Amino acid sequence: MSPQQRIRLARRHAGLSQAALAAAIGVHRSAVSHWEANDGKLPSMCHFQQLAMVTGVQFEWLATGRGKMHMAADTEFDSVAAADALLVDDPLELRLLLAFREAPLRSRAPLVEIAEQLASMRTGKARQTTAR
Image: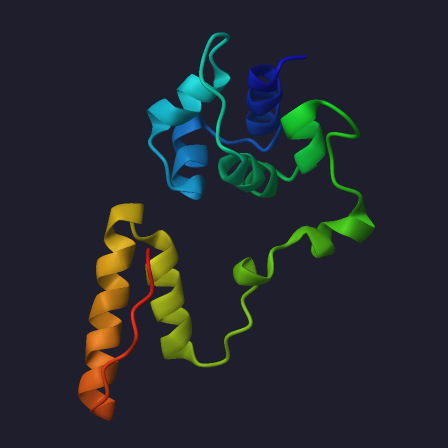
């Protein structure tokens, strides 16, 4: 089975349309269509990882065809990236985090810059910016 066929199978098994999968990953629907096309481009490893998480299949199976398609129940929790875990107690912080995650990729850097500017106005200190 080709990687394109595994992507399509994983998406269908998860009950997602191409548009819904694209929205969950943060890409255009046409990207998912290309990934599933017989002669289409393959996703990046980062997108393969996101595909596996969103569809609930093993990364190794999705990327290489080896192993089982589905995650074992005892490894499912361990497969959640720490950054994806919601360990936020403050409701406002949670709203900010969810808004960031739902924003289009091109809007995320400006959102962070706005938050940093507001924080520096409050503290009187400029924050160190890192390369994006």
